Length: 170
Image (cartoon, rainbow, N blue to C red; front, side, top):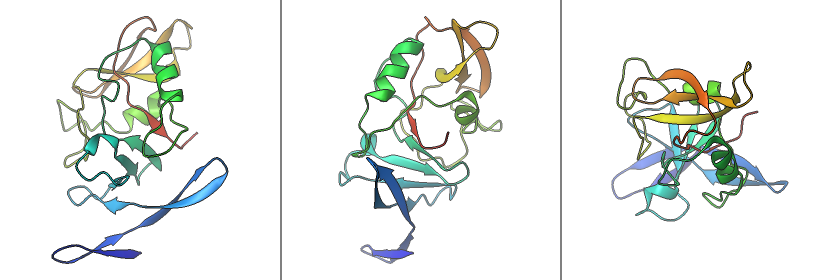
């Protein structure tokens, strides 16, 4: 653990390696005090939360802190393409999460949004978020998670839903 000396007291900061383009670089993740499940990384823009990354220590996934990055809804294929082309926190390799990954953020005791208490995310929409998981019985349908209560359902890929990019995992 490294320590960061702020104005008042030292704060423990775990160091994690992120691999990009075959190179491992160290990133200083700061523990998110209200909910220790999460840590965040600010790529040198302290006044801009929208480009921060969130590390979920429970799943090992890295999420965009801004849960509404494109600022609009889009079809499933457009969501896939958007994530593939995204550079966030000076990192590439973003993708649409699987239905299991996306639903791992949902917390049944919370609503609007259905996320764990003290979560670090911003701009979470209490509506549907696409997953990358295609519905098994119909290839033109995909699973989504409703962040108002955390429900999981499927609909046609032509519908417009929100996009929450993730990195790592599968």
